[in-house]
Image (cartoon, rainbow, N blue to C red; front, side):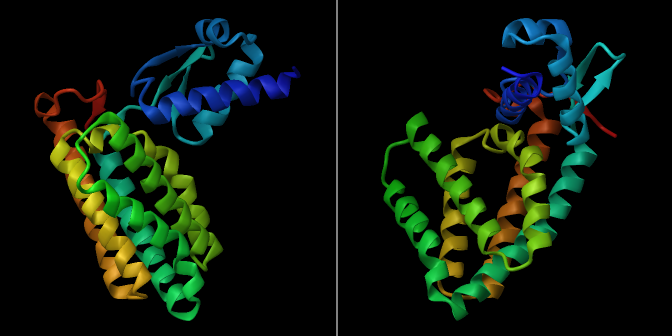
Length: 234
């Protein structure tokens, strides 16, 4: 395996662990310990750290390692302010696209059908893993069918930062159930070609998600069962 491919492998593994919350916000990443765990020398590990720093997921520490970016209250607010502007606009564009090309509704019809089938299922970890997969499919479909390439690229670039907040956003069964309903509403508005309703539904979903995350960050005692959260107020 070449040095570059080792760096790619270490980067992909660490990014996946940061996004999933397996490596918690604020955690230290030692170059030596990461190299031993992932069977890589220090150079590809350092290269992976540099790439992750460029994406805002880690901060380099004294040329020896890195630290996973903490969850910042202001950072959450900034992220969701931008996401609301971008994603509500994109969702409205996709609904517009459906009006002119009904075939563009196909992925959303499929996603909605699966979401509807989940309504009467008993809560379980498998059920929610399925929902997460459908939510990912929805996001990818919106990115794919947004006619503005710069807009779709900007949304895609924010996904790693959004993904690592997912486990915080879904700290209660009630919020999970509500998120399912919100995705149904967005799908239905897109399928109907109703750009105003689609845009409003996306904005409502993001606002509710932001409220849940900020509540969990500022009141960690109420977010029992969630991940360890390293919080900075700046």
